Image (tube, rainbow, N blue to C red; front, side):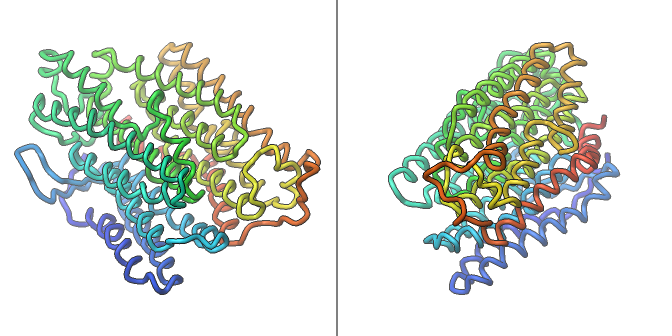
Length: 496
């Protein structure tokens, strides 16, 4: 591994930092205001791609902005894992911007400048989390995401919106202050540093002498970290996520696929692998309890999803379930499982944003939220429901869509570790996924319309919404056919 100190690392951060202010400056010219987001996403994604060849050759780029105390810095780095999330967030922002234009204008939503500003800041926060080279920097950007997505969740400014937003903020800010901040302090006291040892996922921050001398304190620190990262939506700290579905659908897509929940599972992955390391996870007996908690979350959330008739509520519980696949993978600390879990960060992002884009397009076109009311609607909206179907196959784990690849790695990882319970949980969850996704597609194309629903008056949503959701669904297929797109970066990161 070669480490290069360079200011080039600041470019993705600088563009995403300046974009929200450009949105404010162009607030009176909505076409330019919306173009700012698309251009910022495009330039950031291109800059991240410029790092790809070197990162794949084992180079880690690093930038230290300043030091607060010895071992306490604001610093950034681009390694294999950080690259994946730092590329996905701005890349999906491009699609989300086009979709936002169609959604916000079709429904004539209020406070659009505030909306685009907060949306852009959330992307900045996500890129900061992805490129954080230590726990302190990760914590700062994690909090930025929480604060600036609050107005997005409360966007409608009604009683339901404010309730959902308050619950959202209490869960996320409360857990970070009660658990994540003490975990960070304990790590600093025990180790004298918060820097991730990039390129080493075996021992992490905690040296062997600390683990040997203070094993229970290290275990406590780990529990505090997991409890503090409530964005990952592990049960029982998941309840904020369904409540946040009162937000506009593009915000739900942001929460689930791009910034908030994805930042949570990315942070858990970074803390487990770069913070504690696979050897410490195993020797301290932390791997299996974490994996079993994630398996419990997967199955229970899927069972709850089966009971939901509101399409966004069903997708919300699907996210609670799906992102625990990532945590199972990294917690098992075995090569195949880790690779499958980390690949699922990217694979889930494209598939889940497609599903929420689809739900929003259905609402804009028909104002329907109830799945039972969508009988026959696929014949009026074939592009939307076709893309929704492809993304659903990914969630279920059907080839050649990308969700199959990550689940295949996870299943083989559980098998290699002799974890029959986890293997059964993963297989059972795919059956449950089919149970709550297939009926949506079946109703849309094969059942006659409900008597009180006149589907003839409905048609596809605006092209600015339909085109992004079709493209993201096709990317899900592309990633299934060419899984090495993300897998190569993960292999470099873990040195497998």
